[in-house]
Length: 272
Figure 1 (cartoon, rainbow, N blue to C red):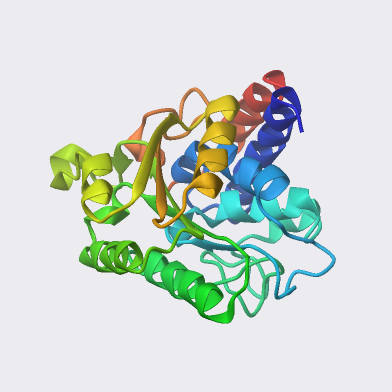
Figure 2 (figure 1 turned 90 degrees about the vertical axis):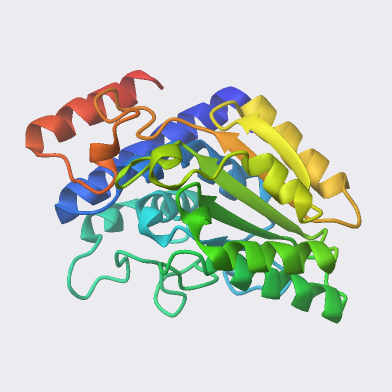
């Protein structure tokens, strides 16, 4: 896909995010929107996946460590063809297979159940190690939140991944600089993120997480890197694409009302 095609697809992913959260009257739009461009590139360009065969043993794997941003994950999967886009309106509804946190037993395309913050990198590291032990050539990707990496288990897993030279693992950190209580630097400072991953023997790439050219180049470099895992630290804007949500911690976990929903959808569509 060209960068313009990716931008158009990302707008559709953002529309799905806002629609899902509005329909549920709950959810986490801010961190879903900040990662929408990355979700788009992963599922439409980077990963070896097949919506018609979501359990293909040779497929690439993805673990959403910050599982509360499932609206972004679900919207990307739906737009990629894993299930109907219309089903996003059932998000968080009783009986829906699109619950607030991803469930690998219920949702097509979900490789690992997640939601307890700090655990996703451990799961992804295990998948990457399994691939190495079995001689498989699939790749593993995991998306972390910058507030989430305050969890100690993240760094235990990073140490393990670096020590075992898991070059089939790519860790992506959504550095939108906000968590539920405010700026990450004010809550519990995690900077410098890149130097921390470098200390655990990662190949580290810093990018603008809304620039598809930079995203494309980063994944190409990750695939070329041998003997060590890669960490892509992407600087993003929380709530990206909806002006009144952008860089606003209040939209970490809040649903728009009817008026806000219409305004958000209009802004997203105008960007296509």
